[in-house]
Length: 239
Length: 322
Image 1 (cartoon, chains in turn purple, yellow):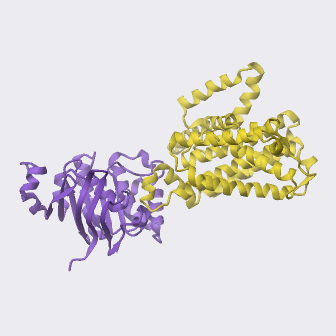
Image 2 (cartoon, one colour):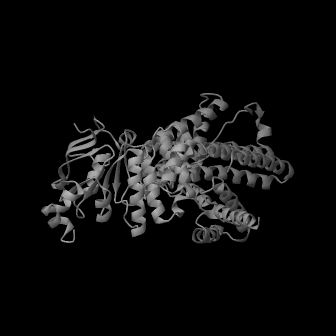
Image 3 (cartoon, helix red, strand yellow):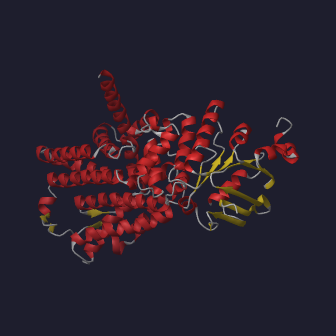
């Protein structure tokens, strides 16, 4: 039987009569990268918010490493191994790079928080910028710092909300490379929301396609690419 | 700043205070310096809230005035010794401010400022009208005993010793806060200030640190209020008025809040300006207002920010030279 690191079961988020997300189920196995795609407003970020506890569920369950975490808050879920990055870069602007990553590791209860911070910074190519104040970094570097904050403390699941947004093609490729290497090295499962189809189809093991708050297709990149509903709804004839 | 640098700065600052207290003969100058020092402590309290929580309070005079009133009322009712009254006042202030903080820091931005203003003015009006307890609009004399912590009041209230007491308190406040902000607590509050949501997503519970900073800032302001009560032997509703909170905020802006000692510098500049400009113009506040606007436009990080840039420039030039 497949062992899931994270399961979202029949998740629904309703705002009054508006069903932003309705009956969504998805899973992550150990070390898996699952791409989550769909047009703007399909409910991808809402699902990420629901999984991390930022958005209360109208219905459904979130199970993390076998435990039901549906009623826990953001901090508890982070400590149980559920981490995320944000659509808009979310870092501590006025703090030096290493100081904030080390603080994050410490808050995660890592014994040698300095060593963990140094590891993550090195893996993301930020070690040379350790003493710089975060707001003085370039945009691409800030995106990587955002990822570093999400990676410390060895989370089991990483939810990435458009990590390539605003990056150049070169920067996107670099980040995708880092991401793939990190996933296997750190044994972390990733749910990746991203509009860059080359990246999503290039690094994902599985893909889930959303439309109007519902899942319209799931499967391997090859299966999803062939699905006529996906071609019609999202990828277009170019896919 | 390293711990070694902090120790050297503290020792130097204490030495400077001792020299000033003995070398300055003029009672007027010492009295002005004492006032400036008390307000420096007040401004550091207000600045701490801005620096660590990113919150602007328009009502911190609440804690400045209340600490004076609390000691005054306790001594008037002879509930305990003056020493215990001081300790009880500060402990009570810390606890009450922490409880207030748990509610108030949830209120974002301008609304927080308005809330502090409203609560401050509520206490101002209450103190103004509770004639029986507070002496009403006339204020109340504080019945200090003949000795305080073993020191005769006649010695303590001499201009030189009063200045030295206030100056030492100022230095200790800066020292203790510097040490505290060097701990994990300092990093956590910085993180929460910079990005509360991200802080939660790295496992920080954000409410308690923010309420703790609010309480600490109130405590520092309360210490200033006690020094003022000791210096003047008097407390009135003016000590609670919003305009006093506004003055403290001006000191913070002029001095710069990014450095812990910036607001203290602002207080010194304010009192110097008041003394010097006051001789030439009755509307000296208008001139100070222009100075305030100039600082905001040209150096939002205040005078401390300018000094920091100058010294950083020199350090970089020296490093480049080597």
